[in-house]
Amino acid sequence: MEIFPIIKHSLLITFFVFSMMLLVDFVNIATRGSMSGLVRGGRWRQYTLASFLGSTPGCLGAFMNVTLYVHGMISFGAVTGGMIATSGDEAFIMLSQFPGTALMLFGLLFILGIGFAWVSDQLINILHVVPCEACFQADCEECLGNVEEPHTDWNTLQHENLWKNLKDPSFTRFLLFILIGSFLVLVIAGMIGDPDWTWKRVTFLSLTLSSLYIIMVSSEHYLHAHIWEHIIKRHLFRVFLWTFGVLFFLHWGLSFWNLDAIIKTHMMWVLLMAALMGVVPDSGPHLIFVMMYAKGIIPFSVLLTSSFVQDGHGMLPLLSFSIKDSILIKAFNFVFGIGIGCILYAFGV
Image (tube, rainbow, N blue to C red; front, side, top):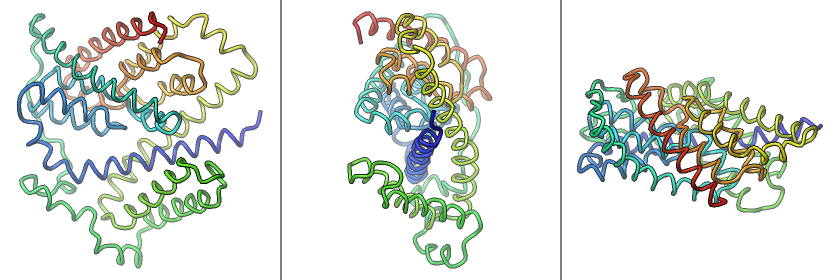
């Protein structure tokens, strides 16, 4: 078994995840100041916006939903629907492996998130469950600036910093510039990704150039606190390890075992395992179902069940706020996810 193609594929997926997380974080910082005004309103507006935030790739939308929930701006059902719509870091990998199906999945989870948000609020009323009250402020003040004047926040990404950052870069900025620049050269030369100028190669080129631009214009705080400490140290290395491990396991399993036949013979158990693994508040273990779907081993219903129940790291901030609410949300999503997955599987999806 050749190991180099697996490493190359893992690096490609990891860089795609890094670029997408960087862009999502950039948009998140640029717009968060005005988000609270959009959220305030009726329950259906809360359900829609929470599910929309959850359906954005990565954990940032889920983190924002938790922040809104602990500030008392959205209901228990809304944050539950947002967690349903969230697919964690696996969303970025799905976009790189099967973009059309991934977008359809995100749209379906968005709709299901809205519907089950309403169901969840009705259930807690029937069960007389009292969710926790609003608590604390958890925003990054240095990035957000004055929340009352959200558009004054551009000190995070100042265009006038470009020349200064290039003339006297910090070690972190220099290192990232070299690494991303090297990846750009490899993409242009066709040594990584598609050798022909397909839409995938153009997409990687665009993401690489966008990442370089953000690296060059970002402030030192944004560079270290958001890009280095959060995206790279907390997410990227683990994404690479999980991606490499899953690809290696699947390649090895398909080479030495009749893994395809074993899974298809026990598909209902696989669906149950996808839901059970989704309870784990982490990104990484769920990646095996993404890769199995990409290889045609499991049906869409199993992938949907995994994505429905799991929420990446989105639940972690809520666990520190209310264990009771976190367990209840996970229980709701597990039951809802199993039900939807079994119905789809029964219809042969």
